[in-house]
Length: 206
Image (cartoon, rainbow, N blue to C red; front, side, top):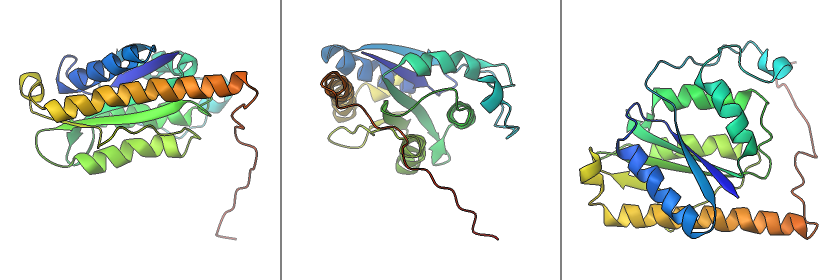
């Protein structure tokens, strides 16, 4: 079992990293390996909607997104972490996830997904909902904790005092590991995730 934890903050060792490392503790407790992948501080382009990724299996913009594709493909679970910028996920993680999920290079069906956000004070619920939408449109079971997956604090030393938030994130990691194990056990018993069986597409302008 392995989970990929994506750090969408421009700061490698900031509060988002603390949040994801805390999730990793819960994952380890549940017997699941994890890797924290930092998107970096360089600009990440948004999707060009050129469609070439569907033909070549990677993005034509050769940056960190293409590094993510094989890691996402081999992972059993994805946890996306982001700071809150203007009541939304960071521009870095938004651009990267738009392109990663659009490429068609990763079979998301049956992989579990979870979102983690951190903020100084507000805007966290809208950012949290934004990140969960990547999973809900991709056939991914969404994992929750026992409260919102949020950590408060402007700096790591402040966020380290949010005992409830840290406990929620540890539990989230444990829950992610549990669901991955359940899915794998189910598959071993013959209960394979169905994937996309029913297909239909409709344009409302005729």
